[in-house]
Image (cartoon, rainbow over all chains, first blue to last red; front, side, top):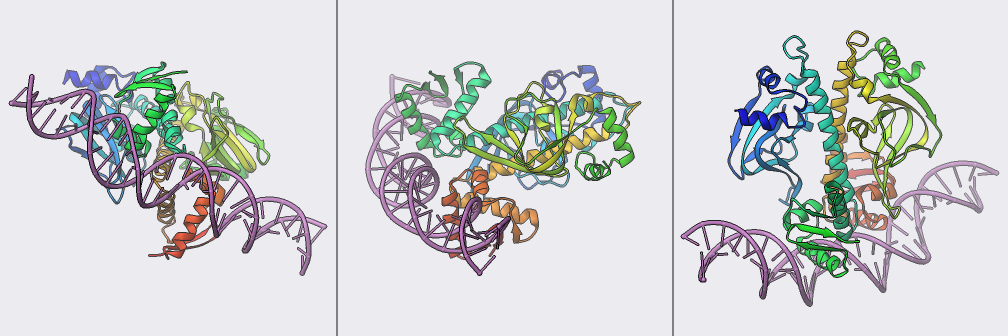
Length: 220
Length: 220
DNA sequence: TCTCCTTTGTTGAATATTCAACAGACTTGT
DNA sequence: ACAAGTCTGTTGAATATTCAACAAAGGAGA
């Protein structure tokens, strides 16, 4: 249980809140902890949600699947990150994504109505939690905004360069690892895997970058 | 000034707050009102922002422009809607979009730090405002999510069908007007205008839909 | 009503992507 | 070390998109 608290204290949602405060809050918020095996559905598209999830331990993917079964990876989730806040915060909205574990995972579910309800006497830190949630949503918003920037590019090459530039900016370095396999990157950028590989080959031939598997080096 | 208040009271951000309460709050929040002519830049990419904007009157577009000047319309803003909340709520982030008026517009700027600072004695409704902001960000998040769904489609046809389905769902009706010209829709979906028109022609020939200008009717 | 100007539709050539199939590289478990 | 399975790179044919140029339709103002 202490180990859980460590991950939670370092999550964006609970930043600025101490372990002692957290312990009291979780009870007040009626938090529920659930364990999932590898490749399990944490949430399924179509479900109405009134709780957000926090990945305490493990790894998961946010996946969107269309009518014909084409998969599109929207993001990957690691320990300390939360998911489904958007749907939980927008009342009356059904989930339109699947959340699937990549490894055995522990998830903490928090009911958003509980978070928003004022109970100043019991939990002075509700206010802080709300502000964290706000900044978390803003962060997700920026993430989606960035993805739209990549998807808005017309060609596979332009999408790749847009994505790799963003990764380099994020790492603050021209050499970095990406968190996707080729197939996952192709899904993320919504292009054909073979075309992606071919384009990477061209970019290497032109001297714009080097790579091996998921390790990349961008060159001037 | 009363007319301003009417639009604000019916905005998502100030919903549940009365005119009297609003009047007091605007002073406390140090709200600043600015008027813009048609085709003017309300905000420019690269600017650091600590305030969100509310369009009190008029109409504006959120536009992203890449290095080579290709424009991508991310959304359109009408009276009562707010913009730049994301950047204002995520500290230390520079704006990566332009906000441009489509018509003469009045904008109210609200400093987010002011909103988040607790001042329970002066403004009991700060809490409500924060919750509205949260739900607003969640709503924007869903909007971007939807756009990603469209952009994630591989072909112009699939993007169109995805977009038109979403519009029909939004209107709750198979017959509706879209808020974009052909060029704007092509920018929004990130495809070629002429290809878009051609695809619309094919869809009509196949009997999937009817349209005239920006009026559409989806057929079974 | 008649221009002028903007928006939308159409076409064919050039370019890019998808699809399918396979070969080689890497991993994992025995 | 070996085998089996997965991931990545390569190729050519089929399909789709972009580009450029022009034609047609719609709208605004005289």
